[in-house]
Image (tube, rainbow, N blue to C red; front, side, top):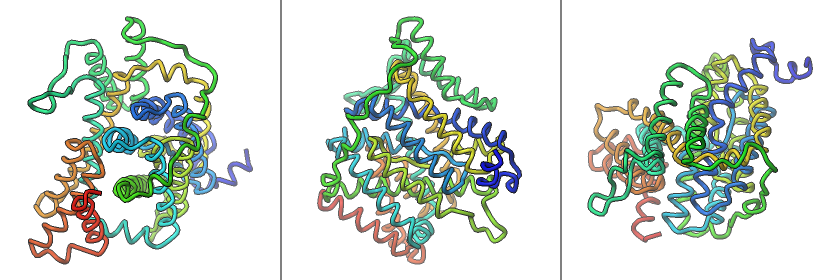
Length: 432
């Protein structure tokens, strides 16, 4: 125990081994929903549920262990919400790419992320992207998750005249999805750890009892990883048509990581007197390595989770918090039958609930400057309406650059913005 305390410098951080372990449990409870939700989403793209279930756990465990043991941050990682939906619904079902090619794009994004993390380009890029577009894209990912969640719940359905319409609100799946969403909100409001997981399980149990969904058992053998392990098509992802996809994976993962780490750094005591974030380089590298590893296992981008804040609130200050969370993920490997028994309408509310959190980004927009908030809102709205994060990012940058140029606000532009805008315009102009 003393060796563990010394390695993580627990006493100097004002914590204890007991506190760190409890903090790791709190983080795990708030993000354990991804074990079920991620394979549920990626299976829509034709991927094997059991294999993705294992890949999700391993990607989360490996990434979180690296973050805890090497970077020594109390931050956990797992396949990111929004990115998994873009993978399945945007790239595979929307662009008609194979999931193997999509995994290749994730791999390439992870490699580029890793290279950027080793150079000064990381800071240059973060500082170059307009705050308004960061907020707009963050909110847009939330709206994208919301429409997918509402569709999976049966609340939103397709309509020949209006594109979308209202589903049958009296059906059992829709009613149970509504109950699940209300439960998540209420439990979260009461600060109950694991609000999402608890609600998913309650809705599932009700569905099993009344025969609305089938139950396959609690535990069983660990599913084979063969269907997805090392199945990524890197060569196929290197085509011009996939350039925008790779960039979208990279952009969202990069800035989601930067935002998450920046958000938790101050609370975790990682900011020094000069405002510098302690160990940010290792933390970002850990994230990029986790994405590469996840693509090899067979899942979409692995990223830092803002839910890590739950553990930090419980007193977690060192990498032992992350290590605890990683171990808890690994213990879930034998629960594949339970995961496969959970119906889609039980996990759908989780997408809408997370979407509501993402949408908070809009409040930080500069609503006094139309040249700032208009492109950001456009980017946010286009993501759910075109079913593509990439479209929202590309058109958001193009519109931002054009609006600033036409309004004479040249000082608001920089090489990074212009480069992305030109690439986005070329993507649509040449039909890539």
